[in-house]
Image (cartoon, rainbow, N blue to C red):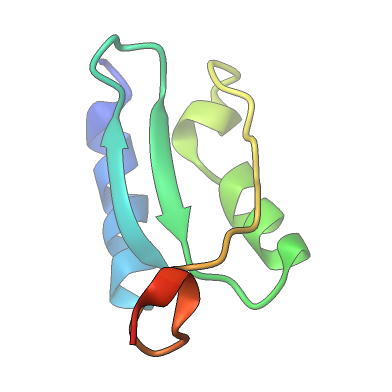
Length: 79
């Protein structure tokens, strides 16, 4: 919890650049999730590596690509 204020500023920067879709802690306080927009796996990994929880050594990033289901791509029957 002591890291929360330092986390807010980097997340606001990501959001301002259009790279943060959503973020939040898990209810059981075991970690959290950032849904990032990145041009490549490498870019996403670099962004995740700069997370204050990762830099403090209290978290290990897990970066996975996903396909968004939305009307624009007709995925899973949308569109």
